[in-house]
Image (tube, rainbow, N blue to C red):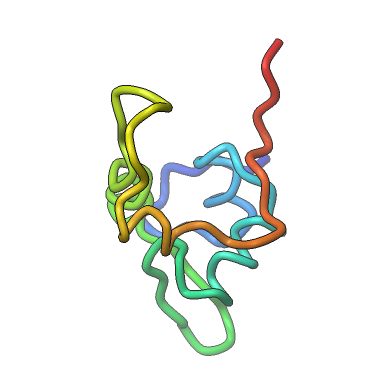
Length: 86
């Protein structure tokens, strides 16, 4: 994976930064519930600060907390978390 020290990340770099698959990030972008992005010509780019903000937007203290309307909107049918318990 190339260095991700640049201010704008491509989809592969952004997915790696968030710990998601590229496919999950792309599906969320299409559904409108992923991080804010920019189009530079035909290229999709993400600002690291937008990725951090999006990741923080659904923080909870417990899995028992009710899902807020905003968090429910973030869910994309068919997209599962790539992290599996060890």
